[in-house]
Length: 428
Ligand code: SAJ
Image (cartoon, rainbow, N blue to C red; front, top):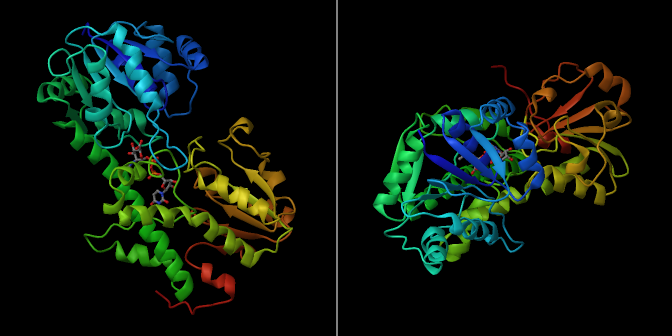
């Protein structure tokens, strides 16, 4: 219980990880280059939205188990949880990983466990991280236990999934896998599986790639169904009644810093061997255009569109890689006036003005729903009928329940109706 843990990076993964180890009784130092994040944590506050996190951070800072700093300190375990963004050419930007690795070297002691949690391209531990330690005088086979333990938690459920999910711990050596796994076994109730670093890197990337390719299949089905007059969502629901089929849901595109990024890490390392993954990315990236082309079928340019939802998915505050950003830009370029409304987003997160609900719908000719926030499930229909110029809803997430017969409702079940193609409804 006297193990000290130093977590580098106090973001969506690092801060909850630090807080949970602290809650389990370990002494934890969180390190971040962002002064604001450090100051807030030291006050027992948080700089990001995640269910349950403010309460845990407050508690562990008060008990003195968690503190934050801009500099690492000597510890038994170092956990690196910094971002791995992509360059414009879709190759991984490993600058933060390299900086974080170099930053801990002066504080290392023989026998330390060093774990990289950040998502990294295959071979990064072997080809990039281990050589940094070697170059700086550390024998990674003898003196340190170096491992990759990818985070696999879903935003909105991070505190639960950090504890309950199975963890994959890939060691640079078998001993490193063992000692790193022992660290997680202190707080994880799920299984902790030991493997090689390269296998852990690849399995993490394949989890998100599987999801991205699956969503691409449903997005492609949406386009096919639009052409053929088929109800996409009904097809998915019915196909999924087969015990071995699990089609994901189509939408306005795939966002976030994981699904929209990770597949490129594989493509970068094996471009000729990965045409399916490459095409899936292209299909998902084409959805903002698909959405805007359909808006053009129902509303002429110059009109006002109320865009509902800017985050990359529902009930979170994260706009990274969100398809809504591109859709707002495309609509504006097409000459539409956009009233953008998102109850989870602050003005400084976006480059265009945000509207309130009322401002967004007033005089709008279409509500375009891009995110399935709970707030959008039931819309105030009276106010839609009163304030909109024409009460039309285009719901790309199939999340709105429309009751009033005077509101025209489109989702991916009936986008083909935008071209006047009607189908007889067969009674169930
Ligand atoms: N989406 C669809 N259709 C679906 C499901 C999702 O269009 O059926 C879209 C969402 O709207 C969103 C994007 O995909 O734009 C990604 O959302 P997500 O909920 O699939 O995943 P993330 O990015 O929030 O988190 C994923 C998770 N990975 C998997 O479920 C395999 C999470 O467990 C990972 O830890 C996380 O990536 C990560 O950090 O890698």
